[in-house]
Length: 424
Image (tube, rainbow, N blue to C red):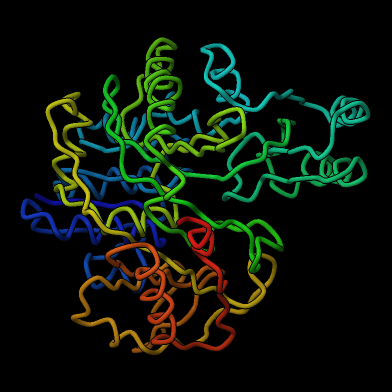
């Protein structure tokens, strides 16, 4: 069969790698792809929001399955457009992708159906938000309602910071239309864990757990980013946590969406905070996480195409979803200055070191071809992933592999997965 992947980052490279392992797939296309994905797929110069061109291409090439990797086209309704044209697509329709597309919607859904989350208020004008902050408990969290590349969340330690944050989001419009509405919620403490699930509208099946590192600097300092690295599984996601979440969060979310007439088919990413009062939902995403996909998909044993089709057809209950009994760590190699200002076009060398190295992966996030060379083309450039028998060996392998790649202005965190040292 022929598969089209929509997107061009590290997540889509991980998806392409998983798809390439399927014995059912004869040809992979990616729109637009990147220099790394080009080794596995034929990249086509169509951007993810050019719905008409994507539909036309899928028809022309008789694509059997389109996998939409990114949030923007999902929230914008690409799956709906593909289905209207008789094409099979993996991912939620527009009315279900709102679970990620609007934080106000998801918070209201959780309140209505009794799904544990932080207490919150929503605002559509800056003055009302500022008035609310005068009596609110600090620290506090400000969230732009819409999509903001994973960066539209500000943790404010005092009133002055919080007021500046409201100005930044709602008045200065740092995140554009994403800041038209604002969610202000209580600050929760605890460890963060990401748990992704395949969903077919009624049934969900969990993937392995993971933990991302959002801050730019070591020790969780600096600005929020799209993610500087991750590890899987999380040792903090215990059997007790799993049982609680299955009873109070996962199934209730799927059923809530169904009850609202927004049947969800695709991937629900549950961002959890393990608070002293029990697990609570920090956020929902409607697709694979990035860089979570880079540590989860290499450990997937089951054919990803079988799972995608079972979700589309409402037959997930009959489909096995199995993962390897090991661990993986991803360290993001970024351009110095990310996520604010950074230079592009730096030549990258060392890719040959990954050839025929079992359990090592170099996922491209922001790269492009420049003649015969591959150069940097984004803030997050590469995701260096390695597997190991356990988390500590996977981390050692991943950091060893980061030394195989060289480019000017290369930057990375040196403490990805350090939290696992706290586990006996």
